[in-house]
Image 1 (cartoon, rainbow, N blue to C red):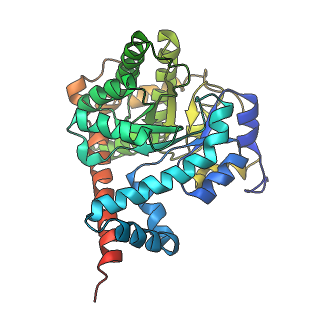
Image 2: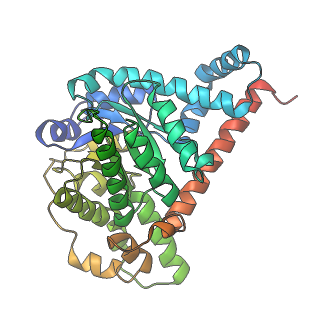
Amino acid sequence: MTDQYTPGPLLEAARNTPTALWNDSSDLEELKQSISFGGVGATCNPVIAYTTISQHLDVWKPRIKAIADANPTWGESEIGWQAVKDMSIEAAEILKPIYDEHKGRNGRLSVQTDPRLHRDAKALADQAEEFHQLAENIVVKIPATKTGLEAIEDATSRGVSINVTVSFSVPQAVRAAEAIERGLQKREAEGHDVSEMGPVVTIMVGRLDDWLKHVVARDKLFIDPSALEWAGVACMKKAYQIFKERGFRARVLSAAFRNVHHWSELVGGDLVVSPPFKWQQIINGSDYEPTSRIEEPVRQEYLDELMKIEDFRRAYDVDGMTLEEFEEFGPTRKTLRQFLQADADLDALVRDVLVPAP
C-alpha cells in the first residue's frame, strides 16, 4: 500500500494522462498536499468555505474580528464573505506558479457567487467580475440554471473564466458550454485574446447519484442498487464525448465524489477531476494502477437499470430538460437550498464571534 502522503496513483495519472487533478477545497494545508499529488487547481463552494472556517476557528476567529474592526458598518454577511475572499486570495497565490506554467488552463482557484443572487443574472455577472479581480487566477462559479446561464454568457464576455456549478446532467452541461462559447465569441469579436481563459463545466456526479437513490426509495422502484453508483459516471462520459464532438473550449469537471469510480472511470480524458482531499488520500493510499477508462462505456446492464428512472433519463438525454426545467430538477433544488443554508450558517458563525452568547 502507498502511504497517504506519498505521491502515488494520483501523481502517476497527472503525469501520464491529460486528466487534471483539482482539490475540492481551498483549505491551504490540504491544497499544498494535493499539489504534491499532482493537483493543479482547486474548487470551493459555500458549504466547503463555511466548513473550512468553522474547523479552523483558532485562525479565523481573530481574522473575522479584524475584518469587523476595519469595517465598523458592515453586517454579518459582508464580514463573512470578506473572510471567504481572503481565504480565496491566499489559496490562489499558492496556485499562481501552476497558473503561469499552464498559461491559464490550470492553476486556478474557484470562488462561488453568492447563492442568494441566484435569481438575478446581472447581479451574478457583476459579482463574478468582482471576484475575477481578486487574483489573476480566479475562476468563478455560477449555477447552471436559466438565470445562471445568462450570467455565464455575460461574465464570460467580460473576460471572466467560469466554473459552471449546481450542474448534474448532460443537458445542463451542454447548454452551459454553449453559453460559454457565445461569451468567448463575443469577447473575440471585440478584439480580446481568450487563449488564456480557463472555463470548466462541472457535473456534480455524486449528487446525481444521491438524488437517484432518493427517488428509488421514494418511488419504491425495484432496481439493481449497484447501477445507482454509475449514473454520474455515465453522464460525465456522455458529456465528455459531446464536448469533444462539438469542439467546446470548456472542459468538463467531475465533482461531489461518492466513490472511486468518480476518478478512476474518467482518467485519460482531457477533463478535470476535483475530489475532496479525503478521497485523494483514499486513492493515493491504494496500490491502484491508473488506466485510461474515459472511452470505456458504462456497462449496458447498468444503463438499462438506470433508464427505469425518469430523472436519470432527463439527466442523460442531451435534450432531456428545457432551460426552464433546470432550476426545478431535484438535485438543483436540493443543492441550492444547501448552499443557501451554508450562507446562513456563515452569518451565524460571524454573529457568534462578534456578539458571543452571554
